[in-house]
Image 1 (cartoon, rainbow, N blue to C red):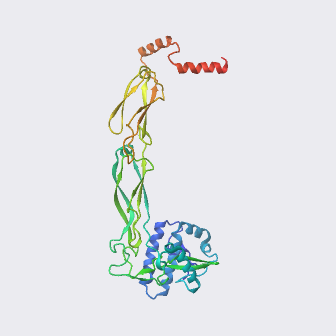
Image 2: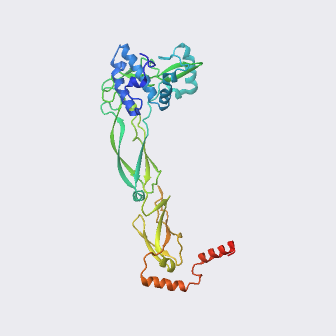
Image 3: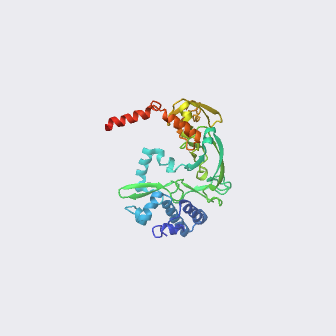
Length: 374
């Protein structure tokens, strides 16, 4: 059976819009069924295994999959010659040159690839501004690949071992001729290891890892902001066959607060004051996120938009000392509900106005007269 004769999606038994996890799961089931180590001497099953491996190798790669979806098998047949098995005499010298020049970049001794590290994972966490101020410990639950408990990450049935790969003869790579060039790729049978399992673990299908939910405690330090990234080493996806795990990255998002706006370590609060307080001066009490109350002096004659700064009452400095500032922006509020007595007092005040009470208004209207010749 040739991988070029049957649609890759049909080979794996998945739909064309299947996601990566569905494709991976389908491949694992078929690989366990047709693996040469479980079907010794059966050429038909060996050919089937090679075909599904080629299909999975294409569909798991987003770029290859996109090319296949558009052009089909023709996307990979432009001048590509045959290439299975260990390199023969035609390519031996070229392979030696590659290894001499690039060394371990092609997998080290014998061309075998080192066990690749598990994938890094991302988790987006939303917290409140108070939690960002004080810091917190939060528990999250994610589904992540972890070492198989049956084989302890080796991928092999307990008590069994590995043997050299029949497809690449233990080299870990296969070569194909493309025009005047020779392209070397990891062996699709052993995935570059140069060896295969004698008896794959039934629980994990030889992968050495199984997806299952995991609860993780995350320490959020004081002072974090939206965009802060917290790295949890070794909490990512387990590597195949006992390879080191990847890392888990927590991306923090801080919710908007109903009282404070944040700019770095500075907190901004817009505080309305009565027009009498603005005119005569006074005080206003503003609590900060630490629970302390800050008394802010309002100078007489303050205007809307004026900002008053309280040093050291803002957000903590992330992984540092001290705190930022609290900025109080004054918003002068015009009364909308006046008693008869209050209205009478204001009417009396208006009758005694000279214009010097509001210098900004007077200056503005003088500019209008000058500009328009009024």
